Image 1: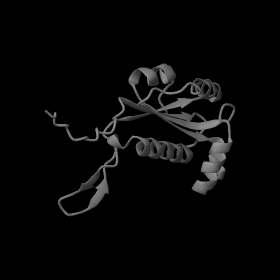
Image 2 (image 1 turned 30 degrees about the vertical axis):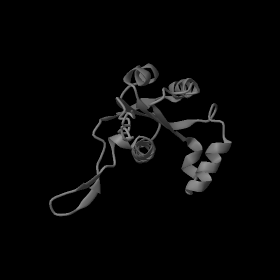
Image 3 (image 1 turned 60 degrees about the horizontal axis):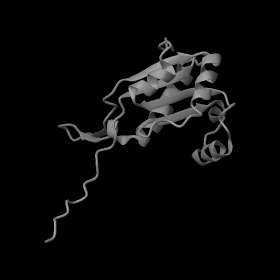
Amino acid sequence: MSVPIAPVVPSAPAVPEKIVIVLAATLGVGPAANVSACLAAGLAAALPGWAGAPLRDPDGMASSAISHLPIIVLAADAVRMAQLRQRLTQPPPEDARLAVFPAYAREIHDAAHYWARHRETSHRDQPLLGVGLAGAKRWINALTGSLPMLR
């Protein structure tokens, strides 16, 4: 007697419990906004379950959904950013995602050039202008719990 096999149904994309962006405290308003946007875009692309769903309003205007989770933006001075960078050498939890904005990225305006530079560069000693984290609250809080909100 054969047993019916249930069809394979793809699971919904993982939705992170928490999303945090840590910015270098020395960034001005414009650069901080740019770094935040770049990091959020990277995280959203890696975890599409929390942003980007196609939407259409009653008038027919099509758009992409914004994040339905708050994105907390924190600040870190150079010492704390270096400490965070060192702690990020440990692999993140399975459902977590990490995006980094190294200082050298400000000078690169071509995606292929940036991706090549990123693959060729150890980020252990690179100054970071921002870090994006999405995943379990416990993991993110352990990394960022003492950092202040960006003001």
